[in-house]
Length: 243
Image 1: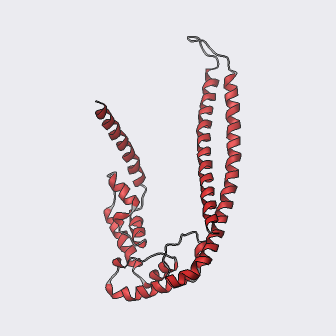
Image 2: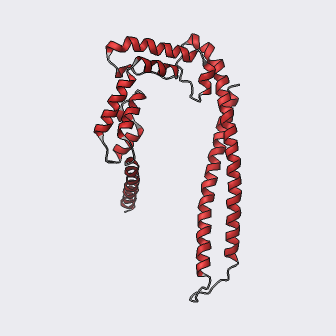
Image 3: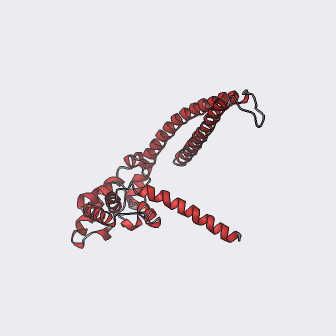
């Protein structure tokens, strides 16, 4: 019996989850998702959003996905695009492109890759992590400068996160104070025995509503603060590891 109940609960939860996923999918630009997948050098079927919508059996425009993917693939398979991909420290998927252009694409990609690997400081400042795309010879030059640029990037992220955390702490204090005031006002309202008319019903209901709303706000702000604390800790740990 328990297994049947658990199965029923699981099906209900799955149905609810799929409902909200289908709602999200309604807002997607299917052409753009197909285009962006191609520009990342991956098949549209591997796109996380497309996979998520398909698993939830959402309404999708497969034709728009395909049209966008083909347009993206046409742009991807251009020598100038190959150069930019190399210069951004990414890898190139040659499987998308016709063999008659592969020679030119490989040459342009290598030019971009070399430009990337000769400017490690700029690469580090972008915030994009190094993906082991430089040759062993160029990596010797690249890594010391990349670490300097990456460290500057991380210090900037730490500073920005600490500023945001101070603002969040102020908001946490403000909301906590507001809730204490509301709860105090609730606590001094005279109690009414069961069956008697409550002359403070409207005020009590209003204060309860305010207290509930402020509790939700407190949870949200605390969650935000916890995320900032974690991010700052991760940034500091990575920055220290670069020394």
